[in-house]
Amino acid sequence: MSLDLQKVTLRRLLETQNHDLYSKLVPAYFGGANSIVYNKVQNFYKANMRIPSLEEFLVLKKDVSTQEYLETEIYDEENINKDIADEFLVSQLQDFYIREETIGFLDKFIDDLDDLEKVEIVDKFQGHLLNLNKAIPISDELYDVAELELFPDDSDFVIYPSGLSAEYDAVNGGFASQELVMLGGRRGSGKSIISVNMAVNRFLQGNTVAFFTIEMRYKEVYDRIVSITSGVPFLNIFRNQLTESEKMSIAKSKIDTFYKPNAELNDQYKSLLKDKDFQKFEHYLKIEKPALKENRLFIIDDESLTLNRIDHYCNMFENKYPKFNMAIVDYINIIKHEDSKDWKTQIVLAEALKGVSRKYDLTVLSPYQIDATGEARFAKGILDSADRSFNFFPAEQGEDREQSNKITIHTTKMRNGKHMSFDVYMDWECVKIDPNQSELSNERPHHAAMFGDKETGKDL
Picture (cartoon, rainbow, N blue to C red):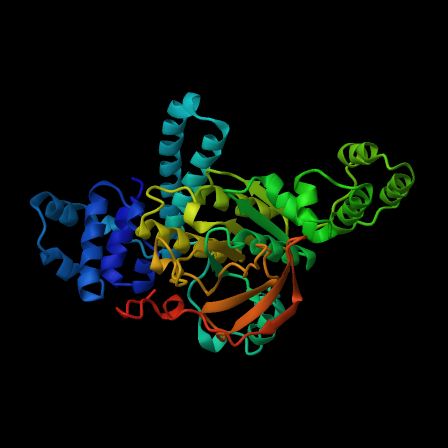
């Protein structure tokens, strides 16, 4: 007669009152009457902060059928097997759970397949994987302080330059992996432009970056990247009104920024200098596909972007690009989700992005909307999950509506950092920030931006 490992686990748990075993179990691992028994154990633990003994559990109030099942099935001596390790029990329960959930998922998926489009198909699979991950631990969580390294290796914790301000980096070191960074700004204030600059700067440091765009088309993001890297005015690129000289600058920048050094590619560029045949040069890049650099800068253009899709792409990039360490989601308030304008949903979205940063060892950056005082719109609690947050207002405009090139940015939340205000300088023509041209500012953010509503004392 084969063992029922769910029963063996429940008997072991009650017999040993082993907290370590209990911490590795979740309700999803148990089915039928076993699920009812486990829920009783869980309720006892929540009320008493310990696991009940066999004797205690026997006298707890239960319905007749559950009491009978406990006495005849769980307490049966056949469920005592000291040769089976706890780790094996947990592993087998996880395997069974994954198989059963996947069979159920595939049955429903096949029934619905004819009505699904390609994006929905990928979403369904990614959603299934996310649900499995919630019930399956993916890494160790217990650390003995005495056994941790006295002087950790440099690769254990990496802080990258922010790409925003050398002054900020000098004080706070930049942005670390596994951090959620949030950038607050009002509508049309330049949140996306600043975000693209930080993506480009991280990429130019030799890293792979994913830029998720929801409102802007990929072409708009791409044109900004080309302007930043080439120095050619953005509007000339966007309106396709480029001079011959500007086209040459873009071609040279594209080669230097994205391609590995290549003799044949250099020869093609020399030919371009002579004949100015840009179509021929573009054809060469598309057909011959010269080798790209190891680090990449990806744009994901999805107006219906969901958390599932973000996880899907991050998983794909992590497996393919060793230096994938930054994802930018532009922007958090419009990620597709049920009741996305509800404050509770906004908090869930922020928690999920923080989870992505931990899961894939990334810096995740996402802009968010603020009101006239600098408070987050939609949900003040949106910043609870953030490690670092900043806000700023649109640059001042002159009488001719020309924007000032100085933007003052304020830190509004600094986990493991020092609060500060600093100015960055934007070349609006090329939509480019030079992080080395920044300086500290004495300006202070609105009280509400950091501490909530001054009148009510309500926190963010």
